[in-house]
Amino acid sequence: MKKITLLLLGVCVAVCASAQVQVKIHEEAENQPVIPAEIYGQFAEHLGRCIYDGIWVGPDSDIPNINGYRKDLIEALQVLKVPVLRWPGGCFADEYHWMDGIGPKENRPMMINNNWGGTVEDNSFGTHEFFNLCELLDCEPYLSGNVGSGTVEELAKWVEYITAEGGTMAEMRAANGRKEPWSLKYLGVGNESWGCGGNMRPEFYSDLYRRYATYCRNFDGNILYKVASGASDYDYNWTKVLMDRIGNQMHGVSLHYYTVTGWTGPKGPALGFDTDSYYDIVAKAVEVEEVIENHKAIMNAYDPEGRVDLLLDEWGTWFDVEPGTNPGHLYQQNTMRDAMVAAMSLNIFHRHTDRLKMANIAQIVNVLQAMILTKGDEIVLTPTYHVFRMYNVHQDATYVPTEVNAGNIVSPSGRIMPDLSVTASKDAEGKLHVSIVNPVVDKEQTLTLSFDDLNPKNVTGEVLAAETVQSYNDFGKEPAVAPEAFTAFKKNGKTLTVTVPAASIVSLAF
Image (cartoon, rainbow, N blue to C red):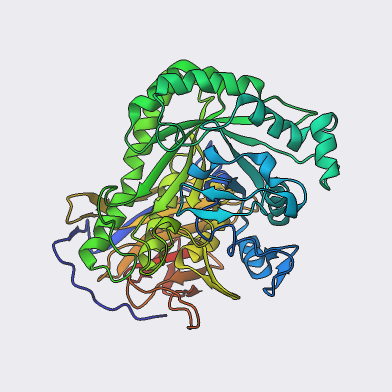
């Protein structure tokens, strides 16, 4: 196990409840929700090098590929068990016209990506390429429809092209190489309609949604799950208006929450940050719980039966781009700090799956808090990737309540975050999984885990740690952040004493 370098705590203050933290695992609790696999969803936008050079290199590339998809990337994503993939945006979705991306590649028109760096795209990655990718990954497609600059007819025909067995659109799809329809469950009616998706008012968008949703029909047994373009962060009025005006016509409403210090000035570097910045970022990430709770309260008031789901379909860290890269491509490195944000956030999401049914981290490759970075024929698995791999045991597992008597950390900006986070679940085979996050940079923590009835046997563990929270994986170098076997635990009857290293993530399986 790697040694954790002591870092100056700065003005952050850790207040621990006791020298040894008590954690009660209620593995016998009844009537607990299942953690939807979709909480571990991904997001792929036409942004920077996410699609081109990231996912798609084309079948004629010297880079090993599977019909144009990077072979190493596909293999890495299959390990994650990606449950759902959102595409083509993001802001790009409301300028994307799907008919430009079908048919022979040489006949597809080029377009300027006005949202992200003015990149010229050749539309070689379109509807067929996306749905074939989802089949390769065995995941559900989540389509973001163009409401901002598109038409009702355009979106309605896209749904028909994808899902209908017969008719003009189905004949066009067959002529383009796909006779059988695809399955499409998740349909987003617009994206960030309050901003890049049209700068609309919630009242106007609500009426527009009702119109679009009316004409996006179910074909031949395919049942659409329609998602309204929801709020950003703390805009609770947007959720209130949508629940009031279209609550009975949507299956889900989206929410976007980025861990970012501000939108008007520098966002801070992804690398080379100090300890104060580390705590500020992790504490900002943890604030998502309050945001989720407030949106849920509004939804509960209008929909006490819980018919409408909440989908956090964009989340993650957002820093300044790496020096020398296109500012519009949002390429940032990924450190142990990002891993902490991912793990702390996922632990929170697990607690709210009564209403929160999906989350899509931004983004899958080469953009923002990416799973994977690529350069030429090289590939890097980021610290965030390792969190998602370690945590995929919680997909479709039954949530297990925990009690933790941890303390708090006050960040330099005044935000308060727990100094320990624990989540647990039981899978279909009855195996218990416990994930523990110690975000404190200079202090290991000793935990006593006790159980309702379990006598822990055959315990195995894994830990993700690094020399510092600034450590990251880079091209041409041995990984600085990678999981290792974890054995710092001791059984004592029906309890387990665990010593969790500073700034680390531990997974235990019973």
